[in-house]
Amino acid sequence: MSIYVGNLSYQVTSEDLKMAFAEYGTVSRVQLPTDRETGRPRGFAFVEMSSEAEETAAIEALDGAEWMGRDLKVNKAKPREERSPSRGGWGGNSRSNRGGGGGRY
Image 1: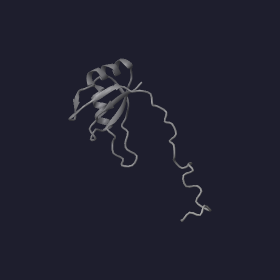
Image 2: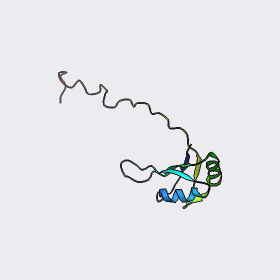
Image 3: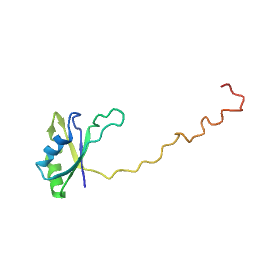
Image 4: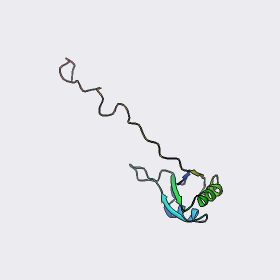
């Protein structure tokens, strides 16, 4: 089970989150995703705690609370949705017939 924490300040660190959630129980893991291209935080995180009761207490206490100048959005994380393959991409036929059609290239 995991907790989603949204609307985070971009200055928040994993250690900041661990300290904030430790008030409600034992924090077993903190994930702070970063943008692949820039390496900057994406403004949300996932926190795992040692029991569901601790997670519930943290969610009830912190959802909507102001922290580091932002109103937090805290709830149970939803399972990750599978992404469908995108259309178009590299396998399309859009430009595969370049030779031999009399066109100008």
